[in-house]
Length: 330
Image (cartoon, rainbow, N blue to C red):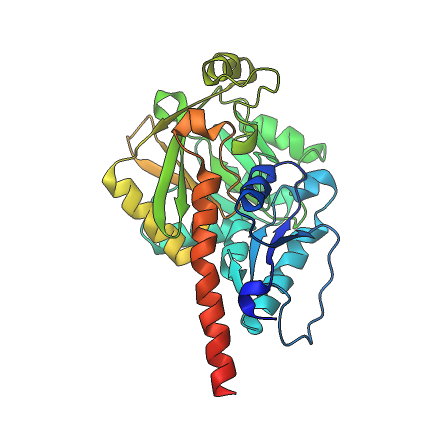
């Protein structure tokens, strides 16, 4: 079997988010195979993959659906694929960054980019000590999150102390968390910049009430009974969410390009806000999982899944040529 005859492996966990991706692959009649990331096995002694390339769509919010084991399993699977020479979209480095907010802050620091003042703890008993070094309000944010899960806001140190005393702080599946200053975003919105192949794809302003931290793009403007974008945007404030497409300043796009290059992210979203007090651009989240905004054609003007599959098609010949080269030198 030649490399081009092998299917693309789509390694994913969420049952709904990637239906548009599968539809686009079907439309182009590209061979692919769905890989269940929540119930997976692999043979570490295999010398060649059954896939032409693997698209890693594992979600850090999988633990909310009872699939937290997939998060840790993915790290080993990605490393294995890279060892045997299989192209993986969002490989082991991207996975390591996606699933560790502490690493994300270290990456921002290494690039000289600003982010909310933070401390990292591995036990709830240290939350108050960490908060004393910061300005209230603060948030406690689990290290492995996703979809805004595991974020709790505290307005006073007394409230935080009471939560610690009553064992009400859960540090998540790796028992590590950020204690971070809550920053009021200028204009009441945060920004998410989607990148593909190291380049700008689109960006959104996401307006929130500050009470909800669920910023999952696939669930923004998801109004099943009506598909109108105008209706979506009118209804979204009832959920505390509204979005609009925009183009960030050139210096922000350049910074995001540096982030995805350092994190080796092939496709993903970077989130930032503008500090209302200082006007500073503060980066705060790196998403190697990019499920794109719901109703994207109406929200951003094109289908990002079509662009994504365009990119996957460009990767297939690269895989084939590499395989042929190995055969020629064998």
